[in-house]
Amino acid sequence: MTTQKPDSSKLDRVLAQQRDYIAKREQGYREQALKLYPWICGRCTREFTRANLRELTVHHINHDHDCNPPDGSNWELLCLYCHDEEHNKFESFIRYGSTSEAKRDAATHNPFAGLRDALNSKK
Image: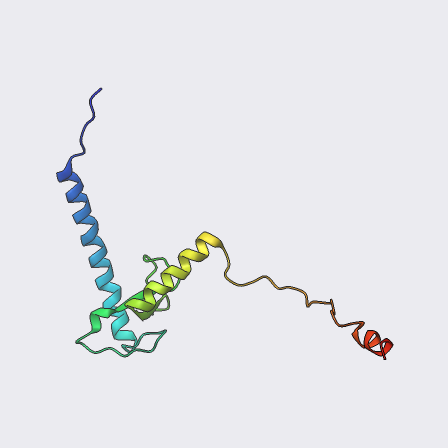
């Protein structure tokens, strides 16, 4: 039985095409978002200038990178750190479910219910 090695030149070509596609797609909506919104992180409110603008990213609110309405309603600008945190929260939600606790009824047990009577009976 012989095992064929994958054609590395074909794999390199496919990966390069994918990187080019992603870069072109990002460039389009990133440029639009930077024109629409102030250069401020939507979470931590850090302000950006041309010198550090590369650290400001476009986050897709619904996590669908192909959903890019021209009005920018699916985008928010986030710094690298807040963007990573947003995706970590989303991955945790997918993995573990809702992060909010289920509504619970109020406790009805009163541990001191008979304390007054017990203290009065000892007098």
